[in-house]
Length: 589
Image (cartoon, rainbow, N blue to C red; front, side, top):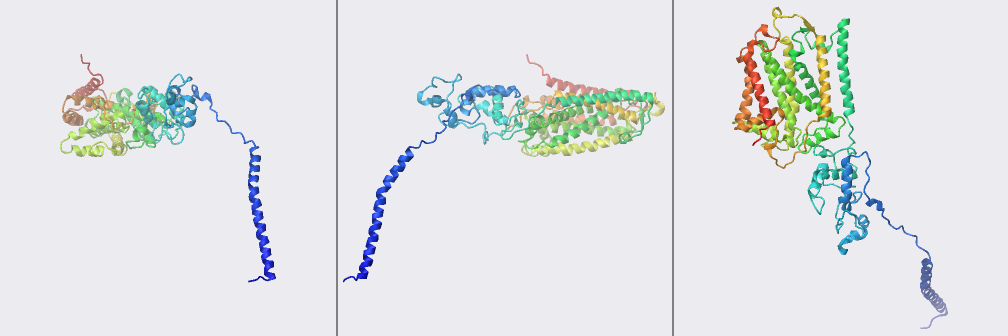
């Protein structure tokens, strides 16, 4: 089949186009390697930018220098950390990182050479082969520990890893203090002990506690000056004979009372002082409630926080503690005064029973508040003291469950004691206290003879009476502040599940005589029956024994109730002797 001239022209044109494309591709393929080689030659002539050579500051291996405002405990801990812990945990607590391992050069790989090399440090060590040593500072460090106490216990038992238990308890506290300072959670001037370490958290910083002593001493001085000013004012008032108008507090007292029986050597100021101490306990107790957490894992720790970290927290807790102890003594003295002066006679018998009930409540409040510390020091009260309830026939288990919150101390026990202390006993104390004060006013105030049989008819006005009470309160406040500033309330480390020897633990001081009685035999007889019989005997005094006559009232040791006086003195001496015997046990030869 022949092609036409037109077809031949199209074929020739297509043929030439194909030939041109093939020629272009062939030339491009031949030139591509040459261009790549030229480009490589050009790039090879360009000098790459210099990379910084990583360097290590050798000063990081030198002995650390701690600022002077840190505690001595922390400074000593820094030296121990430098000599024992730094090789594995890093100078900044970063752990055994590759960067830190490289700082020791050939010493970081001593398993191959079998030695530490020629320039090993004076305190020789072995760097672990694998980088498994954790960091003690930085994000996520010490996550397994909640507080400084747990860090200390771990260091004491398991560190250093090549010789566990090498550090003493004191050195373990020093290392703990420094490690926590690396985490920036340790107050600078804070000294760690068993009684405050649980308050220092490992994951959060705490504010730097200040020194409350200057402010406390200043407040003590102000109260002392106020007392001196009141005395001077009284002397000036006697000269000027100023006229006063009664205020609310004056109206709480009768217009006048017999001056002879209002003397301090007769009343001992015990009644007014007890009211003052109750007010201090109420105010300080409310302040403590803002920080106290009634759970087994937080109770003792929150007490440590109050004592160590809260501004004026130690003062508040010390005032609460010493006021409670003073109230126990003052209430006992008040009972002694009432019996030894025969002031419970006739129509005052009901108020005597109310006061006796208040004394019992004071003891129970002191006992429950003691348990709320939930530290190692309260084990006797928690275990032995409460177990006395189980010895009561028929209802013992019910009484125990009602008190503790279960068949044995458990997670709910702290809440149960907290409820008893804050609500039940405190409310009963307020009700009986108001009733007691009302009855004192209704019964005519201080017990005195009838007007016709008084040796001195001089009377003291309510203004002078209130002034005397305020003066006694100021002086008592000075003493309380001084004691609270220099004698801290006791506290031990938080209670753990580890069992301890109950026989070597002590009851609260006001129950030491009960603990001594328990050594004589049957717990129910000596620990339950005898104390209840003692309380019942005191309650029966106004009803079973002779009372003082009307003309004998208002003086010490009236003849009419001499039997009651002798019995009360004997009971008091027995309780004191039992307490002393327990505190100072006889030595066995």
